[in-house]
Image (cartoon, rainbow, N blue to C red):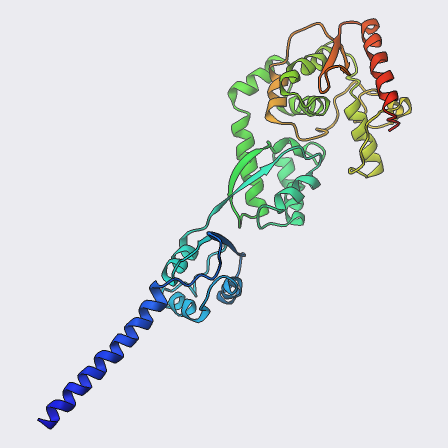
Length: 347
C-alpha cells in the first residue's frame, strides 16, 4: 500500500511537472510575444546578417527575446537567416514570428520621377531599398553595362522609366539596374518603337525631347502641343531654342544642380555647352531631366499644328500662348516680359 501511494505521488508530481513544462512550451511557442502598440511594425534584416543581428533588430519589438531564440533554434531559423523587409503584426507569437522571418519577405513599392541626374536617382532609390547611393551610382555608371546597352554617362538616364515598381528591400544595385533594363525594354515595345521610327527619332532622342517638354509644362494636356512646337523646329532644321536646356547647361557648368533659375538672360544664350539649344542645332547629348511617361508619349503622339513659338500665358498660369510667326510671338512675349518685370524676378 505504501509503495502504491509513492507511485501515485510520483505520477502526480510527474503530471504536474509535465503540465508546467507544457505550459512553458505553449507560452514560448503560441502566446503573443510582441511588444509594440501599433498594429504592425517593420523590421529590416540586412544582407549577410547573422542570428545575433536578428536578435538585436527584434529587441525593441518582442517581450521575451530568450523564448523567441529557443523557438528559432528549434525550427532551424537561427542557422538560416534570410535578409529582407518583414512586416510584424501585433500579437504574433514566437512560432508566427519565426515563420514570418523565414518566408515572409515583404516587397516595397519603389517610386521615382523628375530626377535630373543619375546622382539624384541613386539618392532617391537608396531611401527605398538596401543598396546605398554609392553602390547604385556605381552600377548605373558601369562602363561595361553602358557599352553593352549602347549608352554613355550623359544619356544613361534614358534607361530609367519613372513609375511605381515592386522590389524586395534587399535588392542589390545590380539587380535594380537589371530590372530597370527589363522595364525599359517592356516600355519601348514594338508599338512605341514604330511610332518613334515614323517621326525619324530613336527612343533615346524621343526621351531627350520629352525631357525638354517635361520642363516646359507641368500640364499633361498641353504636352502634345508643346511637343509639336519642338518637332516643327526639329523637322525644319531649326535650333530648338529651349530655355530649360540653357538652365541645365548653367547648372552643369557650375556644378550646382540645386540652384533655382526662374529667368534666362540673353547672356546665358551664349553659354558654350552641348546642352545649349540656342547655340547648337543638335539635340542635347542626354535628357535634361527624367521625363514622365506622359511626356514621352506626348512626343510620340505630338500635336500636328503650325505653331513654332510659345511663351507663358500670364492670364492662364501653367499654360502657354502659341504663335505661328515671330511677330505674333513677340507680342505675346512682350506681355510676359512686362509681367515678369512686375514680379521683380531678376534670376
